[in-house]
Length: 319
Image (cartoon, rainbow, N blue to C red; front, side, top):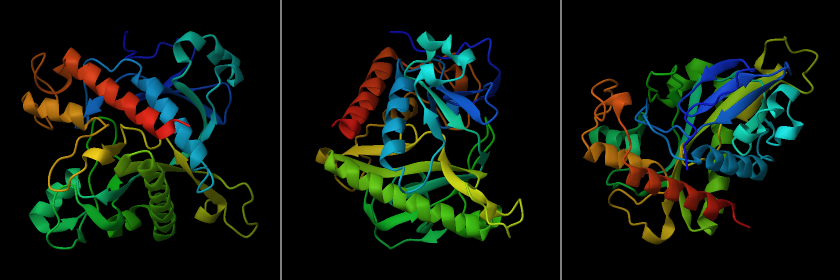
């Protein structure tokens, strides 16, 4: 089984190449083609080899959540059926089937909307130092992996490709995008997280935290009195991926025990291997097999990562 590291669609215009997704323009002026490759990144660095069929697993779980959560907030998904996409896309069906989505174009909100229900990752690192998470004071005596009294919205900047996201306070986020839009995003993000976490629990899975991305599209029925560029003339929607193991921390309920790192269904397994192997965050060049983009994932870690992704998708989406 070979991983698809780069999509190859010569008759389409590639407009963005992210850590996982390749985004193409289409003959439809209102739509984009999102292609989930099998690339994988850790600590903001894309690794040299990928995880076979990972893009298909990410697409499958995103589609599940877009449908399940559609009543909370609209999203950018149009279709995953290649035969329903613009004619120039259909010739690449063999390559795209199962890993492509046609989506609405949107004005991207420059904010990573992170919701945390448990003390983990960068939140735990900050808490140990200052007793805060994204500058928000937290109760004393929390331990790693502990469930928080209630989920919290912890935004970060949305960095350009190759740069690092930066954790910011709610106050900084509100200044960045405006208080009205910030309030809409935080309310929607918390509702999305709570609903998804409740479903995950019924499937034996803890959703510890996740990252949402939002965009703005013209409102279906803007107010006649609203200026053309006002926030009230635009509709907030969900964009990008949704609640995938790439953007979320998923833990098995049966093995959960507060007080340390948790077994996971996400790429924490890969991150842990990188750290054990000597990888250091922020080093993006070096000899093959060492720092940054020269790193090649060992085959047993590739297999283990894929198995964890596949198990999460199966548990969360099975009927």
